[in-house]
Image (cartoon, helix red, strand yellow):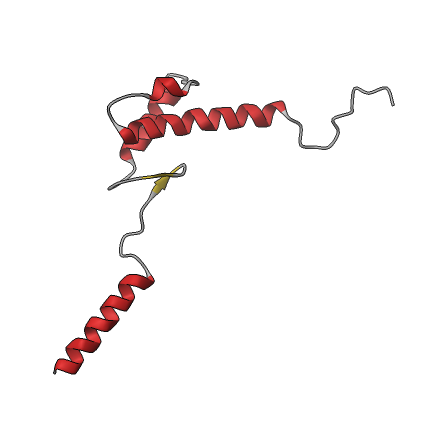
Length: 96
């Protein structure tokens, strides 16, 4: 009987190292706690208010601030992509 309990304990212990029971969720690269609702709220608020400056993302809630920051970062990334051509024809206006 003891061998069975020991074997069961070993399998349980090994299983806990193999895969965590609750893999932590992320929101745009930020770790969420229980769920990502605070991050989503910050992101949505920033989108509704067209926030583009990370200094506007400073409040009392870390998750809200991170969601706001995720929106600001995404807008900056989009602006950088829109400002640079990826098609390789950057010399369209040249006289060649």
